[in-house]
Image (cartoon, rainbow, N blue to C red; front, side, top):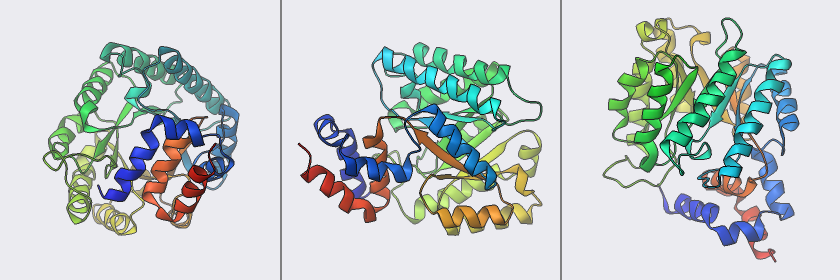
Length: 316
Protein backbone atom coordinates (compact mmCIF):
# COMPACT_ATOMS: atom_id res chain seq x y z
CA UNK A 1 0.00 0.00 0.00
CA UNK A 2 1.34 3.42 -0.91
CA UNK A 3 2.09 6.26 1.49
CA UNK A 4 -1.04 8.16 0.45
CA UNK A 5 -3.36 5.30 1.39
CA UNK A 6 -1.54 4.73 4.67
CA UNK A 7 -2.04 8.40 5.52
CA UNK A 8 -5.75 8.13 4.78
CA UNK A 9 -6.10 5.07 7.00
CA UNK A 10 -4.35 6.98 9.80
CA UNK A 11 -6.86 9.81 9.43
CA UNK A 12 -9.75 7.36 9.30
CA UNK A 13 -8.81 5.67 12.56
CA UNK A 14 -7.47 8.60 14.62
CA UNK A 15 -10.13 9.19 17.33
CA UNK A 16 -9.37 12.88 17.93
CA UNK A 17 -9.47 13.75 14.24
CA UNK A 18 -12.70 11.82 13.81
CA UNK A 19 -14.29 13.58 16.78
CA UNK A 20 -13.23 16.99 15.45
CA UNK A 21 -14.51 16.67 11.90
CA UNK A 22 -17.19 13.99 11.63
CA UNK A 23 -20.09 16.42 12.04
CA UNK A 24 -18.71 19.08 9.70
CA UNK A 25 -20.88 19.88 6.68
CA UNK A 26 -18.04 19.25 4.23
CA UNK A 27 -17.48 15.77 5.61
CA UNK A 28 -21.18 15.05 5.24
CA UNK A 29 -21.00 16.34 1.66
CA UNK A 30 -18.05 14.05 0.95
CA UNK A 31 -19.87 11.14 2.55
CA UNK A 32 -22.98 11.71 0.44
CA UNK A 33 -21.13 10.50 -2.62
CA UNK A 34 -20.28 7.16 -1.05
CA UNK A 35 -22.92 6.62 1.66
CA UNK A 36 -26.67 6.28 1.26
CA UNK A 37 -28.31 8.05 4.17
CA UNK A 38 -28.37 7.47 7.89
CA UNK A 39 -31.09 4.87 8.33
CA UNK A 40 -32.76 1.80 6.91
CA UNK A 41 -35.47 3.67 4.99
CA UNK A 42 -32.86 5.71 3.10
CA UNK A 43 -31.09 2.49 2.16
CA UNK A 44 -34.23 0.80 0.88
CA UNK A 45 -35.18 3.80 -1.21
CA UNK A 46 -31.79 3.87 -2.93
CA UNK A 47 -31.86 0.09 -3.41
CA UNK A 48 -35.18 0.35 -5.22
CA UNK A 49 -33.75 3.07 -7.47
CA UNK A 50 -30.80 0.84 -8.31
CA UNK A 51 -33.11 -2.11 -8.95
CA UNK A 52 -35.03 -0.04 -11.48
CA UNK A 53 -31.70 0.53 -13.24
CA UNK A 54 -31.02 -3.20 -13.30
CA UNK A 55 -28.53 -3.30 -10.41
CA UNK A 56 -28.52 -5.21 -7.14
CA UNK A 57 -27.26 -4.00 -3.78
CA UNK A 58 -25.15 -5.23 -0.91
CA UNK A 59 -26.21 -3.60 2.36
CA UNK A 60 -23.58 -2.45 4.86
CA UNK A 61 -24.23 -0.71 8.20
CA UNK A 62 -21.29 1.63 8.87
CA UNK A 63 -18.87 0.83 11.69
CA UNK A 64 -15.64 -1.07 12.20
CA UNK A 65 -13.47 -2.56 14.96
CA UNK A 66 -16.24 -2.25 17.54
CA UNK A 67 -15.63 -3.22 21.17
CA UNK A 68 -18.84 -1.80 22.62
CA UNK A 69 -21.45 -4.57 23.02
CA UNK A 70 -24.24 -2.01 22.89
CA UNK A 71 -23.10 -0.72 19.49
CA UNK A 72 -22.75 -4.29 18.21
CA UNK A 73 -26.33 -5.05 19.24
CA UNK A 74 -27.51 -1.88 17.48
CA UNK A 75 -25.74 -2.94 14.29
CA UNK A 76 -27.29 -6.41 14.31
CA UNK A 77 -30.75 -4.97 15.01
CA UNK A 78 -30.39 -2.44 12.20
CA UNK A 79 -29.38 -5.12 9.70
CA UNK A 80 -32.34 -7.28 10.75
CA UNK A 81 -34.65 -4.32 10.15
CA UNK A 82 -33.08 -3.74 6.75
CA UNK A 83 -33.52 -7.40 5.82
CA UNK A 84 -37.22 -7.28 6.70
CA UNK A 85 -37.82 -4.03 4.80
CA UNK A 86 -35.93 -5.31 1.76
CA UNK A 87 -37.93 -8.52 1.69
CA UNK A 88 -41.23 -6.65 1.89
CA UNK A 89 -40.45 -4.70 -1.28
CA UNK A 90 -38.97 -7.64 -3.19
CA UNK A 91 -35.26 -6.76 -3.07
CA UNK A 92 -32.64 -9.47 -3.21
CA UNK A 93 -30.57 -9.73 -0.06
CA UNK A 94 -26.83 -9.46 0.10
CA UNK A 95 -26.13 -8.26 3.62
CA UNK A 96 -22.48 -7.39 4.20
CA UNK A 97 -20.85 -7.24 7.62
CA UNK A 98 -17.35 -6.93 9.02
CA UNK A 99 -16.60 -9.61 11.64
CA UNK A 100 -15.34 -6.87 13.98
CA UNK A 101 -18.82 -5.29 13.73
CA UNK A 102 -20.33 -8.55 14.95
CA UNK A 103 -18.19 -8.87 18.07
CA UNK A 104 -14.87 -10.36 16.97
CA UNK A 105 -13.02 -7.75 19.05
CA UNK A 106 -14.84 -9.15 22.09
CA UNK A 107 -14.58 -12.87 21.32
CA UNK A 108 -14.87 -15.37 18.48
CA UNK A 109 -17.91 -16.89 20.15
CA UNK A 110 -19.65 -13.52 20.34
CA UNK A 111 -18.97 -12.91 16.66
CA UNK A 112 -20.14 -16.33 15.55
CA UNK A 113 -23.34 -16.12 17.60
CA UNK A 114 -24.26 -12.77 16.05
CA UNK A 115 -23.49 -13.93 12.52
CA UNK A 116 -25.49 -17.12 13.08
CA UNK A 117 -28.39 -14.99 14.22
CA UNK A 118 -28.26 -12.85 11.09
CA UNK A 119 -27.81 -15.83 8.77
CA UNK A 120 -30.83 -17.63 10.29
CA UNK A 121 -32.80 -14.39 9.92
CA UNK A 122 -32.01 -14.43 6.20
CA UNK A 123 -32.59 -18.16 5.76
CA UNK A 124 -36.02 -18.15 7.41
CA UNK A 125 -37.51 -15.84 4.80
CA UNK A 126 -35.42 -16.75 1.76
CA UNK A 127 -37.31 -17.07 -1.50
CA UNK A 128 -37.05 -20.24 -3.55
CA UNK A 129 -34.15 -20.03 -5.99
CA UNK A 130 -32.84 -16.79 -4.51
CA UNK A 131 -29.23 -16.00 -3.69
CA UNK A 132 -30.14 -14.23 -0.43
CA UNK A 133 -27.13 -14.42 1.87
CA UNK A 134 -24.95 -12.90 4.52
CA UNK A 135 -21.66 -11.79 3.00
CA UNK A 136 -18.75 -11.76 5.43
CA UNK A 137 -16.33 -8.95 4.65
CA UNK A 138 -12.60 -9.49 5.06
CA UNK A 139 -10.62 -7.07 7.20
CA UNK A 140 -6.92 -6.85 8.03
CA UNK A 141 -4.73 -9.96 8.12
CA UNK A 142 -4.80 -10.13 11.92
CA UNK A 143 -8.37 -11.47 11.77
CA UNK A 144 -8.22 -13.48 8.52
CA UNK A 145 -7.84 -16.87 10.19
CA UNK A 146 -10.69 -16.28 12.65
CA UNK A 147 -12.92 -14.92 9.89
CA UNK A 148 -12.39 -18.01 7.74
CA UNK A 149 -12.93 -20.38 10.65
CA UNK A 150 -16.25 -18.73 11.49
CA UNK A 151 -17.28 -18.84 7.82
CA UNK A 152 -16.58 -22.58 7.58
CA UNK A 153 -18.50 -23.21 10.83
CA UNK A 154 -21.53 -21.33 9.55
CA UNK A 155 -21.51 -23.02 6.14
CA UNK A 156 -21.23 -26.42 7.84
CA UNK A 157 -24.59 -25.61 9.44
CA UNK A 158 -26.10 -25.03 6.00
CA UNK A 159 -26.47 -21.30 6.53
CA UNK A 160 -26.55 -18.85 3.59
CA UNK A 161 -23.17 -17.24 4.12
CA UNK A 162 -20.62 -16.00 1.59
CA UNK A 163 -17.03 -14.91 2.13
CA UNK A 164 -14.67 -12.22 0.86
CA UNK A 165 -11.09 -13.10 -0.13
CA UNK A 166 -8.23 -10.68 -0.77
CA UNK A 167 -6.05 -11.30 -3.81
CA UNK A 168 -3.09 -9.48 -2.26
CA UNK A 169 -2.66 -11.93 0.62
CA UNK A 170 -0.08 -14.63 -0.03
CA UNK A 171 -2.22 -17.16 1.83
CA UNK A 172 -5.34 -16.68 -0.33
CA UNK A 173 -4.62 -19.30 -3.05
CA UNK A 174 -4.49 -21.90 -0.27
CA UNK A 175 -7.69 -20.57 1.31
CA UNK A 176 -9.67 -20.58 -1.93
CA UNK A 177 -9.89 -24.35 -2.41
CA UNK A 178 -11.62 -25.13 0.93
CA UNK A 179 -13.87 -22.09 0.46
CA UNK A 180 -15.01 -23.26 -2.98
CA UNK A 181 -15.89 -26.65 -1.50
CA UNK A 182 -18.58 -24.86 0.52
CA UNK A 183 -20.49 -24.05 -2.71
CA UNK A 184 -21.43 -20.47 -1.99
CA UNK A 185 -20.77 -16.90 -3.10
CA UNK A 186 -17.12 -15.87 -3.03
CA UNK A 187 -16.40 -12.15 -3.29
CA UNK A 188 -12.92 -11.45 -4.64
CA UNK A 189 -11.25 -8.11 -3.85
CA UNK A 190 -7.73 -6.85 -4.38
CA UNK A 191 -7.35 -5.91 -0.70
CA UNK A 192 -7.01 -2.45 0.79
CA UNK A 193 -5.07 -2.89 4.05
CA UNK A 194 -1.48 -1.88 4.72
CA UNK A 195 -0.06 -5.37 5.24
CA UNK A 196 3.61 -6.32 5.59
CA UNK A 197 5.39 -7.59 2.45
CA UNK A 198 6.01 -10.98 4.04
CA UNK A 199 2.28 -11.71 4.09
CA UNK A 200 0.94 -9.64 1.20
CA UNK A 201 1.79 -8.64 -2.34
CA UNK A 202 2.22 -4.92 -2.74
CA UNK A 203 -0.19 -2.95 -4.99
CA UNK A 204 0.51 -3.16 -8.70
CA UNK A 205 0.96 -5.80 -11.35
CA UNK A 206 1.61 -8.60 -8.86
CA UNK A 207 -1.80 -8.12 -7.25
CA UNK A 208 -3.48 -7.90 -10.66
CA UNK A 209 -1.89 -11.19 -11.70
CA UNK A 210 -2.96 -12.81 -8.42
CA UNK A 211 -6.50 -11.52 -8.90
CA UNK A 212 -6.76 -12.99 -12.38
CA UNK A 213 -5.30 -16.30 -11.23
CA UNK A 214 -7.93 -16.57 -8.49
CA UNK A 215 -10.65 -15.45 -10.91
CA UNK A 216 -9.58 -18.23 -13.27
CA UNK A 217 -10.19 -20.78 -10.53
CA UNK A 218 -13.54 -19.26 -9.56
CA UNK A 219 -14.68 -19.39 -13.18
CA UNK A 220 -14.29 -23.14 -13.36
CA UNK A 221 -17.50 -24.44 -14.99
CA UNK A 222 -17.62 -27.51 -12.76
CA UNK A 223 -17.25 -25.41 -9.61
CA UNK A 224 -20.02 -23.08 -10.74
CA UNK A 225 -22.23 -26.07 -11.53
CA UNK A 226 -21.67 -27.25 -7.95
CA UNK A 227 -22.80 -23.93 -6.47
CA UNK A 228 -19.84 -21.54 -6.44
CA UNK A 229 -20.99 -18.04 -7.33
CA UNK A 230 -18.12 -15.63 -8.12
CA UNK A 231 -18.52 -11.99 -7.12
CA UNK A 232 -15.76 -9.90 -8.66
CA UNK A 233 -15.45 -6.74 -6.56
CA UNK A 234 -13.29 -4.47 -8.70
CA UNK A 235 -13.46 -1.16 -10.54
CA UNK A 236 -10.50 -2.07 -12.75
CA UNK A 237 -11.75 -2.05 -16.38
CA UNK A 238 -8.80 -4.12 -17.60
CA UNK A 239 -9.47 -6.88 -15.07
CA UNK A 240 -13.18 -6.74 -15.84
CA UNK A 241 -12.53 -7.11 -19.57
CA UNK A 242 -10.30 -10.14 -19.01
CA UNK A 243 -12.79 -11.75 -16.62
CA UNK A 244 -15.61 -11.35 -19.14
CA UNK A 245 -13.47 -12.82 -21.91
CA UNK A 246 -12.57 -15.81 -19.74
CA UNK A 247 -16.21 -16.42 -18.78
CA UNK A 248 -17.37 -16.22 -22.37
CA UNK A 249 -14.62 -18.55 -23.58
CA UNK A 250 -15.85 -21.10 -21.04
CA UNK A 251 -19.51 -20.53 -21.98
CA UNK A 252 -20.34 -19.28 -18.48
CA UNK A 253 -23.50 -17.20 -18.73
CA UNK A 254 -23.76 -13.67 -17.34
CA UNK A 255 -26.17 -14.76 -14.61
CA UNK A 256 -23.60 -17.15 -13.10
CA UNK A 257 -21.30 -14.43 -11.76
CA UNK A 258 -21.46 -10.74 -10.99
CA UNK A 259 -19.43 -7.59 -10.51
CA UNK A 260 -19.64 -5.60 -7.30
CA UNK A 261 -18.69 -1.93 -7.05
CA UNK A 262 -18.86 0.84 -4.50
CA UNK A 263 -21.55 3.49 -4.52
CA UNK A 264 -20.18 6.62 -6.18
CA UNK A 265 -17.19 4.96 -7.82
CA UNK A 266 -17.07 4.68 -11.64
CA UNK A 267 -20.83 5.00 -12.17
CA UNK A 268 -20.33 5.08 -15.96
CA UNK A 269 -18.65 1.68 -15.84
CA UNK A 270 -21.48 0.33 -13.68
CA UNK A 271 -24.07 1.52 -16.20
CA UNK A 272 -22.07 0.21 -19.15
CA UNK A 273 -21.88 -3.30 -17.70
CA UNK A 274 -25.57 -3.28 -16.82
CA UNK A 275 -26.49 -2.18 -20.33
CA UNK A 276 -24.48 -5.16 -21.64
CA UNK A 277 -26.60 -7.46 -19.44
CA UNK A 278 -23.89 -8.26 -16.91
CA UNK A 279 -24.94 -8.44 -13.28
CA UNK A 280 -23.77 -5.48 -11.20
CA UNK A 281 -24.18 -5.16 -7.46
CA UNK A 282 -23.58 -1.88 -5.62
CA UNK A 283 -22.00 -1.94 -2.15
CA UNK A 284 -24.38 0.38 -0.33
CA UNK A 285 -23.31 1.70 3.09
CA UNK A 286 -25.65 3.52 5.43
CA UNK A 287 -25.48 4.85 8.97
CA UNK A 288 -23.96 7.64 11.02
CA UNK A 289 -20.30 6.58 11.28
CA UNK A 290 -19.43 8.47 8.10
CA UNK A 291 -15.84 9.63 8.62
CA UNK A 292 -13.85 6.34 8.54
CA UNK A 293 -15.62 5.06 5.45
CA UNK A 294 -15.54 8.35 3.54
CA UNK A 295 -11.86 8.93 4.23
CA UNK A 296 -10.98 5.46 2.96
CA UNK A 297 -12.65 6.43 -0.31
CA UNK A 298 -10.50 9.56 -0.38
CA UNK A 299 -7.52 7.24 -0.10
CA UNK A 300 -8.68 5.57 -3.30
CA UNK A 301 -9.56 8.82 -5.08
CA UNK A 302 -7.21 11.75 -4.28
CA UNK A 303 -9.48 14.13 -6.25
CA UNK A 304 -11.57 14.41 -3.09
CA UNK A 305 -8.61 15.61 -1.03
CA UNK A 306 -9.78 19.26 -1.17
CA UNK A 307 -12.88 18.32 0.86
CA UNK A 308 -10.69 16.60 3.41
CA UNK A 309 -8.35 19.56 3.91
CA UNK A 310 -11.22 22.05 4.25
CA UNK A 311 -12.92 19.77 6.80
CA UNK A 312 -9.82 19.50 8.98
CA UNK A 313 -8.81 23.17 8.77
CA UNK A 314 -12.29 24.42 9.64
CA UNK A 315 -12.89 21.92 12.45
CA UNK A 316 -13.48 23.51 15.87
